[in-house]
Length: 263
Image (cartoon, rainbow, N blue to C red; front, side, top):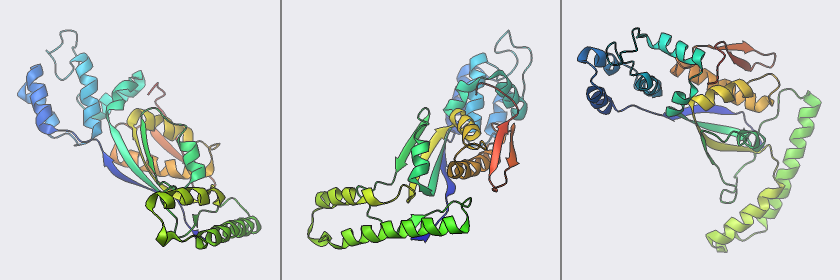
């Protein structure tokens, strides 16, 4: 058994097509002055979300919509108003892709409960025969409890290796290997570390961060989404401008939005 700990890395995100946005604004009749701001806007989903919100009201500049007499040009102000009103649907346009490395199947069993606005690709133990058993032992256990858990995991791995060693893998087809790999995994613990790519739109992310960093949330998923929240706060400061972190006794953070909304 090798001790491990969950880590989260952002590996992708929605990017805007600047030439397409230029053509869109021209087709809508937005002036060159009104279009210039978007030429300098961040090349991320934040800009796409702002465009989606503005097209609903034709609020790119004064004069496009006779009903609009005031426009919030500062993106921070614009997003603050968006969050206060609860216009969550526009936040669905921007997607972020994370890889979660060394998370347990305990955590991914919790993760799959979030289905709307997400995509999941997880390491398959039907095909992957683990070279080693990576396992995170929760810090909340006492030293004696942690040692007992380690012993239980090592006993499980020992039984797995004994079975694995009795099989002539080099004489088998891939389909035969798959079937036996799938059968053997049943004796491995749920806490076995795995890897998963998880993608979600910003509307979903705001909700899941709040739910899964709650002090009552399972400790590992709280560790994971504390990292997700810090990435989102860093890279998308307007969408997550109202999220504040409170450090918990175990070192994880609980994140709460101050602009309560339907987002």
